[in-house]
Length: 437
Image 1 (cartoon, rainbow, N blue to C red):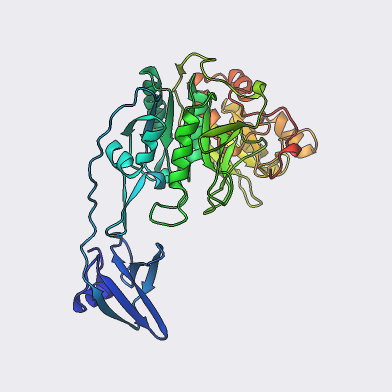
Image 2: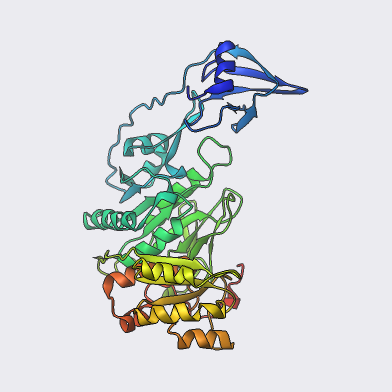
């Protein structure tokens, strides 16, 4: 067990081990459930119970008495291998796992949740996938999405490229939700794809009754069989467990810490909904790419020395100077309103122009376009060489600048690429039509 300190001593003196069903009495409150293990770096005052309703609960042991109800086995994952036979009537879909909640699997005997390290793990716990496609799956990585970086974007793009090149009808990338929209944008710029590339994840793990993992994964495989041929994010469309949206990879953002419908298309609408394997297009045909309309191309050169800086009332120009002195090749500013920063930043921003370091202006409002011609502050920023980011999300602009600087270091060419719509990242239509849609 990873329990230590006071909680470890209490469990030892009570003869209780992980996997046992126990009763905890604390003042006038009674808890009953299965004792789960904790991570090695957890505190020494709490233990974790798996309740009968499927949820986990942390309990502070101060003033508590423990009683063993029924001995159990220490959680260990035992999956019976699944015999996989190809169905000649079905298309082949590749699933590439980078980690995250969507690929976690539950041992129903112990209640413990584990990462799915292999394709066999994933298919054994989601055999229904084999009813709609022949699944070719591999684990590229097993990391938390907050640990994603540009090197993993490149590895993901290369892995997807290889799968398509080897004949996959569509590709699903399983990914943690925290930085999913960064990866979606990166793949949108690095890949021109003739088939669907679907990125999916889960807000809630498979041991919770409200888990969204299964529906997201099933709908993602269904979307990979569709006629849409773009990089898209597939996640819950609403709080219920019925359908998913397919969001364009350059226009999507995580908007809530825990809701299942956390992903939203910003300054745009979703491309489609998918329910029970049926895709309903929400955009007209001129607004999306169809299967086999493009040849497969990979352009994965990335410049990772790019900063994303948020403007705030106390922002000092030293932050800009710091990044210039450290040799950063580009900066994205998340400005206020129509694209503003404090006037006292101008000397540092003019220095960036002298250094031929592109600075892209976006808005922390998220909805709406940058317009730096309305107020004098914006016009001075334009005169200092700031490049307006149109209606791009700050995260998308950051990723696009990383990719653009991998193609060229010439400032005029960078400006041209950054202000050109390449992968649906810049919308011509007024964003008023999409606000909080």
